[in-house]
Image 1 (cartoon, helix red, strand yellow):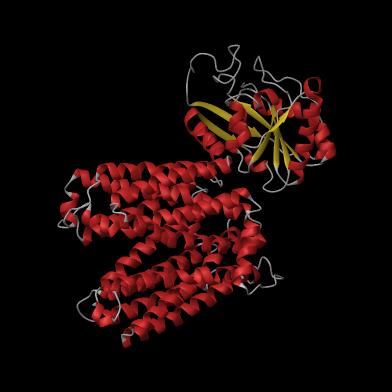
Image 2 (spheres, helix red, strand yellow):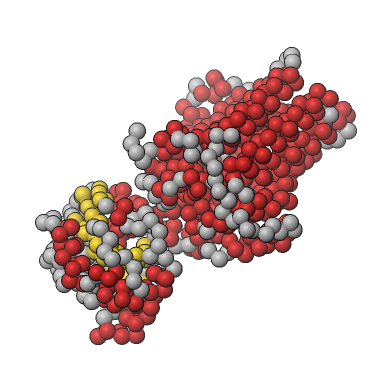
Length: 627
C-alpha cells in the first residue's frame, strides 16, 4: 500500500476511532429504525388504532424532524467546544437512549418506541456537524477526499447492514425482543468505547456566542454559505444527492415486486447492490482525485447517475408483475444481472458525485465556521429528503410507474447538474483537465510540494503549447488563476475553457495599455485574497521549442505584492499537437496520444530575490535538454 493510499488512515488513531464511532452510530440507528418500522407494518390497523402506512411515514418524519429544529444550534456547539469530548457525550447519550428503547420494547409501547426514534434523530442531528467538521482538523488537504470516501463508504454499508440486522432480529420466531435489545445496547456501548480513543480536537471558535434561536441562526448560516458560490453549489449538490438517493431507497421494494417480479430476498439484493455501489464509488474517489480535492470528477458522477438510471429503465420498464422470484432464481438470468450492475453503477456514480462535494465544502470553508456550514447542509439534506417523498407521492398519484419515476428523476438530475455547473464553471474546467491528464497524456509531476499549501504565490513557467495551463492546473493541488494573452482568452474554444477557470486576460502595452493595467490590478487582488497566480513570462508560445527571454512583468507584480515565486518547467509538450512545432498549432490530425509529459517545480524564490533574468535561468535549468 503506497503512502498516499486512503486505507492507511484506518491504521492511524487520528482517523480509525472516529471512523468506527461514526459507522457504529449509523449501524445502530438503522437496526432500531428498521425493527420499529417492521413492528408497525406487521400490526393490524385495529390493534394500533391508526393506519399503519400513516404511522410508518410519521416515524420517518419524526426521525428527520430534529435536523430541522436543532441543526443550527448543534452546529454552533460543534464549533465552540472541543469535538472529541462532545462526541463522547453524544455517544453516552446514545447508551441512555437505547436503554429507553429496550424499556419501550419490553413494555411493548408503540408511542414510547416512536419517542425513542425521535431521540435517536436528535442524537444524529447533534453528531452531524461534528462528523464533517472534525476531518479537516485531523487530515491534511490531500487526505480529505480519501477520508471522506472511507466515511461515506462506512456509513452506507452500516445503513445497509443495520437495516438487514434489524429486520432479521425482529422477525425471529422466538426471543426477538431480547436479541434486539442486546444488539442495540451492545452496539451503543461499543460506539462509546471507540469514541474515547478519538484524539483531542481543539475548539475552532471557543469565543462564539451561541444564538439559541434556531430560525435566526439558520438564516445567518445560509447567509454565510452564500458568500462562496462554490460552497453554495456544493451544498446544493449534496442535498440533491440525498433527494435522488431517497427516491431510489424508498421505491426499491415496490420496484422489486412489481417491475422485477422478485420477493423480499431480491429487494435485499437490490438494496445491497445500490449500497455497495455507493461504498465503492466513495472509495475510488481518492484514486480518481490523485490525492487532491478534485471537483473535476463531480460532473462524471452527476451524468453517470442519469446515464445508468436511463439504462435501468430501458432494461425493464414493466410495472405489473407478480412477485414470485427469490434471489437464486433472479440471478439465473443474465438480464437481471445486468440490472444489478446498473444499480451498482448508479451507486458508484453517487459516490463519485457526492464525496468530492463534501471535501470541497470542508476545504473551502473557514475552519471556524465549518460545523455551522455543515449544520446548514444537514437542514437542506433533511428538507430535500422530505421533498423526495412528496415528489414520489405526487407522481405515483398521477399513475406514473416506479420505472417512470426513476426515469423522470434522472432527467431532472441532468437539469440540476447543468444548473450547478453553469453557476460554478470550475467543475467543468476541472473535468476537462482531469480528462486531458488521464487520456491525452501520461503526466509526471515532480516537486509539487514546493508550492505553498496555503497563502498567495506566483508560478512562472515556460510556454510550449495551448494545453500548458491544463497540465499545470492538473498537477497543482490548489486552484490556480492563469494570466492569459487576451487573444487566446477571447478565442472561441480555448478562451471559453479559461474563462471557466476565471483566468486573467492581459495584453502588451502596445496593444491595449488599459487591459494591461487592469490585468496587474486583478493579479494583485487575487494575491491579496491568498490565491495562486500563474504567468508565462515569455508572453507567447515558443516557435522553436526553446525558451524566449522572460519579460519584466513578474518583477512589477512582486514589487507591488511581495509573495514567493515558484519556477516551473514543462517537458515533452513540444512534440504535442497543441504546440507550434509544425508551424501552426492544432493543424491536421493529432500524431499520437498518451505521450509522457513532465512538470517540474523548483524551490520557491523569496520575493526580494526575484528578477526576470534569474527566473529564466532557473526554468531553463529545470527543463534541461528535453523540450
